Image (cartoon, rainbow, N blue to C red):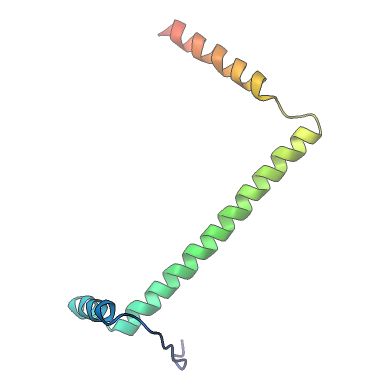
Length: 92
């Protein structure tokens, strides 16, 4: 991968000093650490985006099932689980 681009940023002197010391203590160039941090950030953002899309699909599916009459009301679900809890309590 070509490393032709230059990235300049302003940070506090103390933060820079601590970062440089930590990179040096790990025997790694600061630029390598920054690249890894950038890759991790990008990966986290992609995962967040994918998860948000997954949740939206789940919500859309649930809403569609309710519109088509396939959903169950909260009262029915609560009653079913109350009955299950009672059965389990009796078995214990």
